[in-house]
Image (cartoon, rainbow, N blue to C red; front, side, top):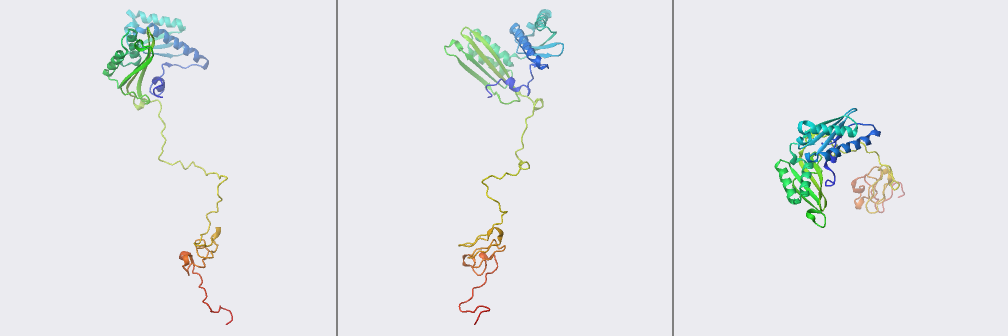
Length: 313
């Protein structure tokens, strides 16, 4: 969504500060926001020719301080400071509070996105080609040392029947990098064919890490998180556990020395891994020893005709 969000709002609290800085009770916040909006609208409309890219407002319990950024401070101050005093009195009358008005000069207007957008909009109103206005603004900005600029115009460009948008860019514009200082400006041109919108993005470089207001949390993926893992609960379909005490199984129909390692296989094989069981005929006919020679020797079978011990002759 990097193309659709305002770069200023995306970076407020990270590398940029709020334009209005004050504290108030919850029931007063709405009224003060409306008051700030009226101040900005009045000053912007009155001093549009002076090039006003930004207006900052600070408040305390008794006074309102306004910082007016402008590219032509002489127009704002006037002859002998009469114009700025007239502005201050008119703002005081509008809000009913004492006002302190300060001027902040913008020394490089060609690198301010808002001023560039307003300049292109003014040229569109004078019927200058939108492509020429856009490319001239981009060339001046790149000569001033910016790292990237993008300009987009939208509307009935050149008096076309169907509205469209055209975009040109030069350099890099890392919109998703929060440490990137990207300036953004928007202006509208009131042409005879209708309104045309102008948007400008200017990339001025990265801000050093110590000025960031928040540090992202990085997870350590090199260590396993086993110490917090509990024992798994038994499920309905789990097989019963017999503590691994199952006996071995003999080969070729051998018996199984069942669950206590004490069973006896009857025809080859090993009785529970030789832990109590005894094979009578070695696995794979390898008599006389137990299955795979892992058990005690099996007793030899008596020869034919030989009398058994304790029997009659």
